[in-house]
Image 1 (cartoon, helix red, strand yellow):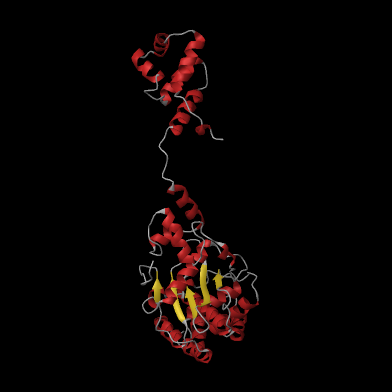
Image 2 (spheres, rainbow, N blue to C red; image 1 turned 90 degrees about the vertical axis):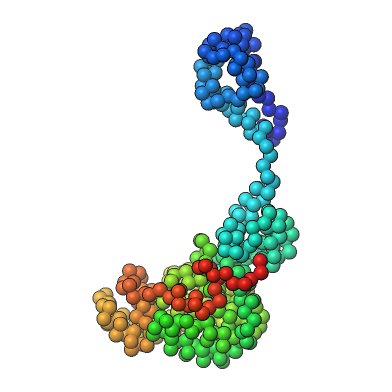
Length: 371
């Protein structure tokens, strides 16, 4: 039981007890402290508090530790302080689990009182947890086999929300998406051509959504299905590079082609971690993405011929033969050799291009999703 649950007397009462124990009058202590008796009387009667200076002075007068009187005052002050707003504790609990403040800033949630916030989070995550927000759905796994964090789940559910407002996208067709892979491959020579990606995917019946990542989420992409005919590819463009964009995009397309994610969303985090142990579905998607970016037999031959000296001239020539941007070649070589600093200047930024034509949430864009 906390000391604050009892009636806490003012420290002045302890000063009077010390005076009585020593047989001193208040005037005696006023003399010792070299202070006005009236001021001392107000202190003893509880009309004034004990300052840090006074705590040290009383400690000298009574030969005790200065913390004795300082702590008495602190305990008294806390015990008699106004009760805080009860919603503070509730907001703290919610924020300790979910990135609530960031979700409010991004427009995903309305800034409401704590009780309504709990209900709003339940609506956001489509649970029926009542006042106690249900996070049982956190059992969802990432591609690395780890449980998805609340931050990752928040991003995932936002992708789903944004995808649901894309009502103009037709039903999914696997043969059309297979053909679409060739159309996408033809765009890989020039960064500006990336602007056509959202339209091509929509023509295949795939909703393509860009959602800015949440701090600490480390999500690259997700594959989910709204229903049997409505696959969704969500990407964060966490690494704003041409090679990463095409690798993650093709990785998610492979999930769609193999109908991964129908039962439970495929949450892809840290796809650049070449050493990560992944399951069969992720290996299939990784292999397809790598082959799509650069045919792996040709890449292997190029590396064997040129390693360890990779010149920009050679990479540009190889990229031209492959019909792709040199930054994509650089990205694949970096993965194979783990030389992450190799010709990074060729890995151009693309986010500013794809956000012109895609359905976007973040980077200053807010889609018309009802909060």
